[in-house]
Amino acid sequence: MNARFSLASSSGAKNAGMRPASTLPLMLLLLLMAGSARAADSSAAAQLQRFSAAAGAPGQAERGRSFFVQRHGGEWACASCHGQVPSAPGRHAATGKPIAPLAPAFNPEAFTDGAKVDKWFRRNCKDVLTRECSAAEKADVLAYLLSLKP
Amino acid sequence: MKTLAPLLCMVALATLARADDVPMPASVPRAYTQECAACHLAYPPGLLPAPSWQRLMGGLEHHYGSDASLDPATVQQLGDWLQRHAGRGRRVGTTPPPEDRITRSAWFERKHRKIAPAVWQHASVRSAANCAACHAGAERGEFDDERLRIPPGLDGRFLQAWKD
Image (cartoon, rainbow over all chains, first blue to last red; front, side, top):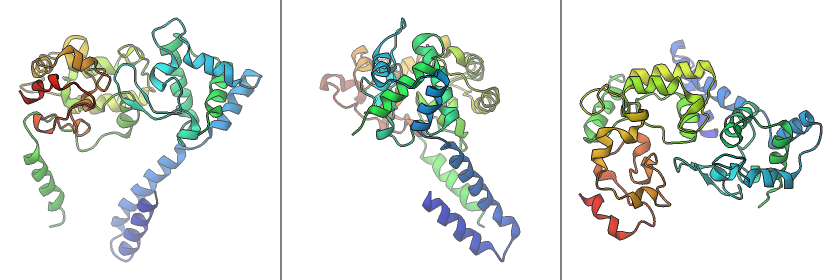
């Protein structure tokens, strides 16, 4: 991010007295940066609060752990792709593609984008439970993930 | 003169591409990397014919056993891009492979006919969808034999297939 920023400002300064049209790349860079900045609009703790509030009760880490490693009638558990203990990278159960650790203490980007959190819960719960997860289930999983510390 | 530089770079790159490469288009939508490549390699669109991409993008809720659904605007954007860059020509042709699977294409099966089942199932490979296990440059669409690597931990007796 720093490198990008200095690049943007130096080209902007150099071009200041020349052609106005050459500010276009700078504007595009700023737009890109705005796009990536918007992504981190939340935190794992805030997401836990959100789901706990929606459930009307605080998430419980042990219940979340058990939910996470269990299969729910289908072929996969959450742990099938994210690993038995999601402090380490996981691997997609079908494709083998590495997946960044899910526990926020081991992956600073995890659960920092509210829309992304909703999107992945929706998809992955359907894969594991053939239905969407309840707010209480999501709160439990978040509580579990936040309980994992280095 | 300045405007010629990117063009010359492209020409240089084009001559570097090997016979089995299926290059990624110069511009890849962010959503392709963020969404599709979250679960699997960002497959170069040239690996499937246009009708296959069309069917895949029309059924993301049931995507090979996973819910890969996206909002309609992103489906449209990625669908258009995939149509523009879909495979055509000698290898991929226009006939979709069974189940629209790259790995069921006739050319794919021919190219991998000497790879033993145990290799596909090996812990560091797991799936024929995991191109990058052996094709070190798969992310850039480089699939040529010259850039093959041996998956970590693979038994030496399987290596003959890499040399053929």
